[in-house]
Length: 343
Ligand code: UD1
Image 1 (cartoon, rainbow, N blue to C red):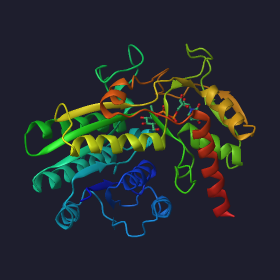
Image 2: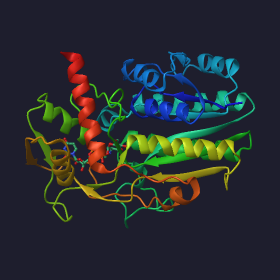
Image 3: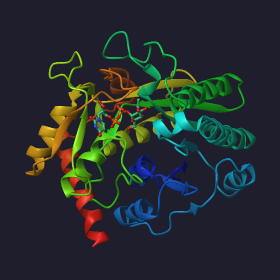
Image 4: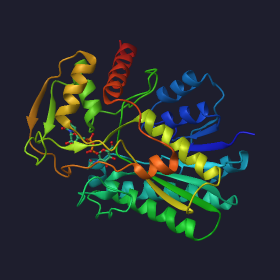
C-alpha cells in the first residue's frame, strides 16, 4: 500500500515541485493551501506533469485547527511536509506580528493535529538563513545558528525549535528540518515554477523578468564584497533537486531509518556562485543579453554562504545533480511560458 503525504503550501513554488516528485516516487499526496500567495497555475502544472487529475486539494488556512483536523480524519497521513508560511524577508521586517502569528501558528496547528492523531513524521522547510553571516564556510549542520536578522528568519529558527521540542515530548512526532540554500529554477516541463507577486525580491526571477522585458535593468547589489569578483556568493540549488531531497527524507522517516528522532540536513550543492556568475551563466545558457548595472549593497545581505551537503549526501543518499546552466535554462523557459500565457 502506498503512503500518504500531506503537503501544506503544496500549491506554491517549492511545494508544487515536491508534490510532483512525491507522486513520481509512488506516494499519494494531499495538498492544503490557502492560496494567499499563489494561484492555481502550479497545482494545475502538478496535475499535468503527473497525469493525476485526482490529487486531493483543500483550500484551507493551516491556522484553522478544525480544517486541518478534518484532513487527518479523512486520510491516514504517514508524513506531513510543512511549507505553508509567509516568506518575504522585507515584508517581515515591516510587519513582524503578521509573520510571527501566521508562521508559528500554522506550524503549531498542523503539529497539534498530527500529534492528536497518534503521531506523524514531520518535515519542516527551514532555511540557510538560520546561519546568518557564518564564521567559517561552508556551513555544516553543526555550525552555530546566528541571531536572526529578520522576523522571517526568526520564524524559521523558532519552528525548528518547536519541532525539536515536540519530538522530545515523545508524543509520536518524528521530525526532519531541511535547511535550503537558494532554491532556483523551474520544472523541466516549464509547467510549474516561481510566481512572484509584484516586483521580485529574489535574484533569479528578477533576472528572467529583466530578460523578457518586464523589468528594465537588473541591479547587482554590491560589487565591493571581499569575494573573487566583488559580488555575493550563494549556493543555488535547483528546485527539482531540492524536491528530491524531500522524497529521500520522507522515505527515511517512514522507513524507520532515522538515527535520531529529530534530524537536520543542509540541502545545497556545496558550490559557491557569485551574482556575476549567475548573470554570465544565464546569458550563455540561453543566448540572451541581460541589461544590468552595479548598485549599492542591499541591507541585510550576507557576503557569502554555501553548504557542506555531505551529511545529506551520505545519510539521505541524495545529491544535487542538475547543472547550473540547465537550471537557468529552466527558469528562462518558465518565464517564457508565463509570457506566452499573458499574450
Ligand atoms: C533570501 C533570504 C533567505 C530566503 C531566500 C529565498 C535574505 C537575507 N535572505 O536569500 O532567507 O530563504 O531569499 O530564496 O533576504 N541580488 C541582486 N539583485 C537582485 C536580487 C538579488 O544582486 O535584484 C543578489 C543579492 O544581493 C544576493 C543574491 O543576489 O547576493 C541572492 O539574493 P536572493 O535571491 O534575494 O536570495 P538571498 O538574499 O540569498
